[in-house]
Amino acid sequence: MEGKSPINKFGRGHRDKVQQFMAITGASEKAAVQALKASDWHLEGAFDVFYSQPQSKIHTDSRQLEELYNKYKDPYLDMIMADGIARLCNDLQVDPQDIVMLVASWHMKAATMCEFSKQEFVGGLQSIGIDSLDKFQERIPFMRSELKDEQKFREIYTFSFGWAKEKGQKSLALDTAIGMWQLLFAEKHWPLVDHWCQFLQAQHNKAISRDTWSQLLEFTRTVDFGLANYDAEGAWPYLIDEFVDYLNENGVGADGFSRTIGA
Image (cartoon, rainbow, N blue to C red; front, side):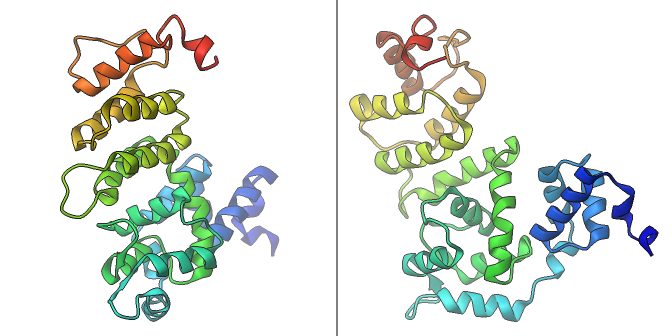
């Protein structure tokens, strides 16, 4: 009977969201409606609701996860290394440089770029209900959506420093840091990212400390693009103070911003 399905009570827009949610998560119609209602019918919020519930983790098959891990693990080490990750990305039809692989690594709590331990791979995928390539592909839109969440973006940004640096090093190599900033701020559309990278290459040319990495995110979040609200007496690292001087010297401050970058 038509009345038995809760989806029929909703308009077409809501019905479409329920069907889209079910297709991506594999959730039942009832679970989809509950998650969407709880998030005021915002798809991204509904993903968060669904994947934060313990029952969403129960639907993974540990045997399938083991097979997935074994498919990509190194023949000589009990880990998935760069070659295995490249094969995984090829099977997922995702570029290895795609930021979604950084989000996946964040879910896995991976210690190092370009390698996954068995515990990281299996535990991370299990936490978001993945036990097959098909489910991995289905979850990619959800993982992309997480970058739009301010708190999750901050967590992913913070995670990236330790993940990207060389083992045993306290700082992040400048070229690696620049690549990571360009990747991360392409999502956040920070207009000054190219200027920041050019400044570092021209005037710094040293590894990046964790403090500078963390403070730059605060700078991008609190200082407007024209620098009008920049406080020179604030507790910014010297490198950020020097960057502001560099911008002003090159006409990219409050007076020259729109001319140089584009309004």
